Image (cartoon, rainbow, N blue to C red; front, side):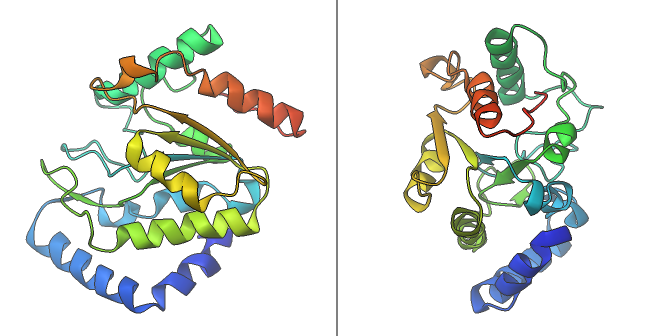
Amino acid sequence: MNSWKQVIDEQKSKDYYKKLMKTIEHKYKTSTVFPKYENIFRAFELTDIDNLKVVILGQDPYHGLNQAQGLAFSTPSSIKNPPSMVNILKEIKQDLKHNSTCEDGDLTSWAKQGVLLLNTILTVEESKPKSHHKLGWEIFTDNIIKYINKNCKNIVFLLWGAPAISKSKIINEDIHYILTAPHPSPLSAYRGFFGCEHFSKTNEILVKLGKEPIKW
């Protein structure tokens, strides 16, 4: 898992993680769980910590068949874009005045450019949103955020929606950048996700830091 391996191995040695994985493995055997087991840690496989520029926090994976692929908000190009993705693409067009490079909903290219697409819960049961809430994933992802906060500098955190925004308390704004907005879901996008301009603002920060901007 490139340079994340040491970070994740440290979590694997902890009691909460052993208990979590025992539960998760049982759930994969006894119910339909997304994403595919081998894609649980895909966000870390695609975004090397040494190349990390941006963290986008999601809640838990999509709970419909063939949607989740181990990256927050992203879906395979072969399926119809879910509503949150539709709204993300709308905001990109409004903000940047051109279409996203990921109109098909597959955000793999963002991940490879240094955008960690991290859900706070990494698995979900089919048709049951937040079904794996409080199994231990939140401890794991909080520890990942704390590690990034402590060991990286000048990371741009995009926190969309109340659960993601609550993580700002474990991020040091003296070292990092935090941009917050309502969630892009149709239930809340009109309360300020549209017009947040997070994509242009992120690139302005990256350019100011002498980093390559993201091709959104």
